[in-house]
Length: 155
Image (tube, rainbow, N blue to C red; front, side, top):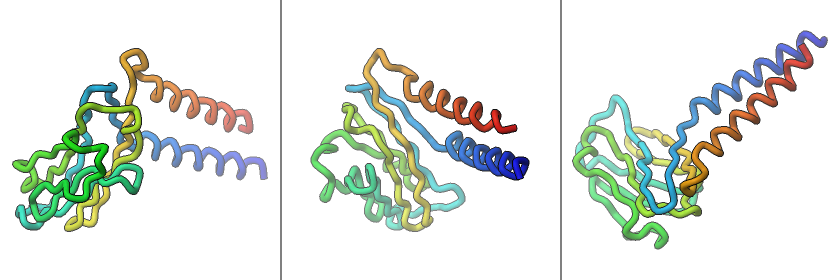
């Protein structure tokens, strides 16, 4: 029974560790810029086919690309004059977003909804001041290490 429990714990830990390692993260500094990647591999786009919605924490409208044209009509005011994309890249399937003049409240999960490709790549953005480089990464590594130690004590 104990062996099954140990195997189960190791499998769960491996899945969680794999998911955490594959999650895309971007770090930026307050006042700086961050490039949030979004691309569709294997799909060629005509500009009129490119409809993409960038959202922050599931609800805030950061930027829309409607039929190959940038749209800020429904953009949340906190992103006014701070979000930009690269229209020359749309036909290549690149819908990355550059967020300028970063603020602490910009931190969070950004999702790029690519309607034609039915893909929703996401990026976790960490915003730090000049003296906090790597703090989140160290914290995540420490938590993973502590979980591993806890599991190993049962083996």
